[in-house]
Image 1: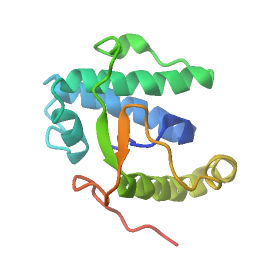
Image 2: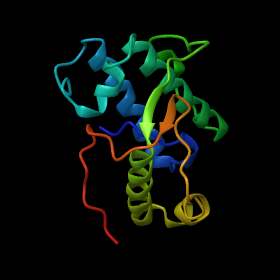
Image 3: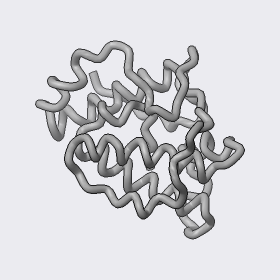
Image 4: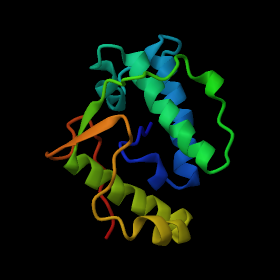
Length: 150
């Protein structure tokens, strides 16, 4: 499960679609509708919110907004709650965003290098998903860090 902290505009097609599906799964987990992934570390930051389901819904709406911009058809009817007027933002560290950008670059290089060159190569400071507020710091403790190639 990968719930990107990056702005959905940075995600290639496969990452955007996978992020949508995996966040819908996260929504099911938080609603108690599945037995799998209940202890997945990516869910910690949502569980820490006063209203975890609203946080996930706000996250999904932003992914659907990017899908709309690209002409994709994501079914917003699958989102359990309407978008908040004043979402409860979640802090994300600069180290986490930098790690995710490097991880995404590595994934994209193997599946869509044109996207990587056009969208990611010029990014020095990655923008966060609209639900997140950037704070200085290292990679988040919940991240399962994978070695990145050179």
